[in-house]
Each structure stands twice: as structure tokens, then as C-alpha cells.
Amino acid sequence: MIEIENVRKSFGSLEVLKGIDLTVNKGEVLTIIGGSGSGKSTLLTCINGLEPINSGRIVVDGTEVHAKSTDLNKLRRKLGIVFQQWNAFPHLTVLENVMLAPRKVLGLSKAEAEAIAVKQLTHVGLADKLGVYPSRLSGGQQQRMAIARALAMSPDYMLFDEVTSALDPQLVGEVLDTLRMLASEGMTMICVTHEMKFAREVSDRVAFFSKGVMAEIGVPQQIFEAPRNPETAAFVKLTQA
Amino acid sequence: MFSYTFQWKQAFARLPVMLEGAVVTIEIALLSMLIGIALAVLLTGFRLSGNRVLSGIAATWVEIARNTPALFQIYMAHFGLGSFGLHLSPYTSLLLGITFNNAGYLAENFRGALKAIPDTQTRAARSLGMTPVRAFGHVVLPQMLRIAFLPMTNQMVWAILMTSLGITVGMNTDLYGVTQDLNALTFRTFELFALAAVIFYLITKTVQIGARLVAARLFRY
Ligand SMILES: Nc1ncnc2c1ncn2[C@@H]1O[C@H](COP(=O)(O)OP(=O)(O)OP(=O)(O)O)[C@@H](O)[C@H]1O
Ligand SMILES: [Mg+2]
Image 1 (cartoon, each protein chain N blue to C red):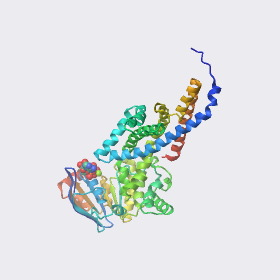
Image 2: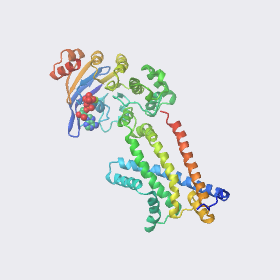
Image 3: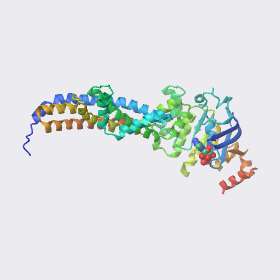
Image 4: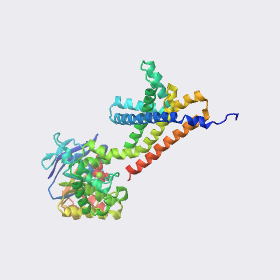
């Protein structure tokens, strides 16, 4: 369970998160939608401790992320994250990309790490690209590789930050299919996305962010068909136009 | 004007001595590169440290190394330090001067190379649970080395050529110094220096070709 309690976060004098309260349960798929600059990415990077917060707390399975005593490197094994772009390590082959953290972080042997990497790469449909360098992959393949790399650490949660928005339209589908597959397997996921159709289809709940505030949260049908907050209504209308 | 008659035999007779000089030249260049790389890493760390004193020291070093003649740098290592009572042998002064120059140029190259690697690479590595040191060692450093590899090769070539400046501080065991001494002895100026030039050329070419082979093996992406 991820518990976010009254989290505030500023960059300099700019307050980007203005008191976020949110709980994500095991097995749940939560998508976050909202305008540019509303703080969606910032929230994800706060959840896995890549960014500090100013007040409030984030608790992952009982561990407070920003507590001084927390071993963030250990905590991050539970939290896979895939960013919008530049995820691939260009100097490593696809297989090596996925093997790196299991070997260096989990301390697995080469054979063990390779077995896991091959399994995850097969899972995302890249079994035929093991020895290839990322520069030879399409954007969609690179994103699927990044997903496999995160999965190789056997995380309990996956955070996705607009993983399709840097892709050519024809490559979006294959990545969304991978996310759908993970959702159907019961992975706990927080997906920041601009893909409204996808959000509607796979989410248990959808949260709408606006200017650092979570303006509304609810089941997809409610958010998309009967938004209570006028800003949500305006945003939904805009994205469906 | 054309009364000079070539006597190549005399020059070739000196080849073994000159090759011994070439070994010293290569030795100085190699040492100056190894120490220079270590110092450049340190200077790069200084510049990124955010500490004003440290980054000031590093910036000054880089500025002087890159914007004054190498001859001046070697001269200062010998006569400059000498006037403060620190008397270094020609060998040490030459090594010090070239190392100073290498470190300055390489520090600038390393900084540029680091800048070319997006922050997101470190983020991605950290998000997989890697410590800052691991993330640097496994993700940033290998990419940085690739970018800095060609400049490092060029600097090695420069270091070899810079050894010729040693004669200004009395160096006479390197390739250029040996040639100069032989010239004073035999007056076969053209032949000797032509031969020295060919040896310099062969050394630097070997470095360049070797570097290309190494790069092709190391950087396959
Ligand atoms: N490292 C940073 N330093 C300073 N300001 C930042 C930093 N990261 C984000 N911001 C600012 O914080 C605000 C929220 O950014 P964030 O990236 O979280 O928005 P977002 O909702 O993900 O937007 P988008 O849909 O465009 O990705 C923006 O105004 C952004 O400029
Ligand atoms: Mg964002």
C-alpha cells in the first residue's frame, strides 16, 4: 500500500504539490491525468524518493520514504519506475540493460540475472532483441525494454510517467498493450498518462490533478462521464474533443 | 645554397641512440597522461563540487593550461619553481609541465563529456536501486569515457610532441634532446631531424591507430 498524506513540495518558491492525500492499494491501477505542470511527474519522483518533500509523508508498505533512517536504495527495489524518455542505457545491450540492476543491486550471479532478464524481455515481446544496442530499437521497443528492466527487480509497484508521450502514434499501442498486460496480471500501478481511452479502460480509479492539487478522484466512469469538479469537466471535455 | 650533401649513413648510424631517446619520450608522454587523467578527474570533481575555493582552483588551472604556451608551462615548472628554491631535474620539470597541460585540457574534456550525458541516465540508474557510486561507475563513466576517448587520444599525441620542448629546460635524453645533441656533434642537421620527425610520426600514428582499434572493441554501440 502507498499512503500519501498531505504532501507538499516546492521547487524554490514555486509550490508544485499543495497538500496531496492519496492511498493506492495493492493490486490497484490508478491513473493520474491533468494539465501540464500540475505536479504529476513530481509526485511520482517523490514516491520513490528521487525528490525530497517539504512536508507531509509518503509511506510505502509501512516504510516512510523520506525518513532519514530509510534505505532508499532498498526501498526502490519495490518501486519500478519508467520515465517518458531517455530510459535506455545506450552503452549496454538490451540484455545487459536488464541484467545490470539484478547483478549489481541484488547481487545475483550472471546466470541468474540473465535468466530473469530473458524472462522479462520475453514477457514484453523483445526476446529477439537481446544482443542489440538500444540505438537500434524503436522508441516503443525502448520503452518496453525499460519496463522489462524495472520488472526484473520484481517490484511490488510500478510507476509510469507518460511512457507513451514521446512516441510516434503508431508505436503507442504496443506499449499500452504491455501496460494492459501488467494490469491484468494484478500489478499495482500508478500511471501518469494523456491517453484517456487507456485510462478509462484499465484504471480502477482516476485522479485529476490541477495546479498542484488533486482536484478529483473516482472510478473512471464517474470521472469521465459525471465529473463533479468543473475543472475536471473542462479537462475531460478538452481531451475528448 | 645547395652545397649541403646528404649523408644518410651517418644519421642512420645514430638510430639506436635515437630509439633510446624515443623510449624516454614515450615514457614521459605515458606517465604525463596517466597522472594527467587522474588529476583531470580530480579537477572535474572540484569544478562540480559547488565549493567556490575548489572550483576556483580548478578553473584557474584549466584556464592557464589551455590559454598559455605549453613552452611557458614547462619553463615555469623548471625555472619558475627554481626561483622559489624548488629545483627540479629537466626530466621532472618536463614531466610536470606536460602533466599540468594534460590535466587542464582533459578536465575540460571530461566536463564537456559529463554535460553531454543527460541527468535522466543517473535518475534511471538510481531508480533501479543503485547507489550514487554504482550509478556513476556503471552508467555515467562508461558513456563519459566514450565521449572523451578521442580527445584523450589527441592529448596523448600532443604529449608526445610536447616532449620536444624539453630542450628549453636542458632535457637531453628524450628523442628531441638526443637528436639535438647528435646535431651539435655531427652537424648532420637535416638528416638527423628528418629521421627524428619520422620517428615522431611513427609513434603518433601508432597511438592513433591503436586507439582506433581499442575504441572499436570497447565502444560497439
Ligand atoms: N527539478 C525542477 N526544478 C524546478 N522546477 C521544477 C522541477 N521539476 C518540475 N518543476 C516545475 O514543477 C511544476 C510541476 O512539474 P511536473 O513535471 O510535476 O508537472 P507534470 O504535471 O508532470 O506536467 P507534464 O504533463 O508537462 O509532464 C512545473 O511548473 C515545473 O516547471
Ligand atoms: Mg510530467
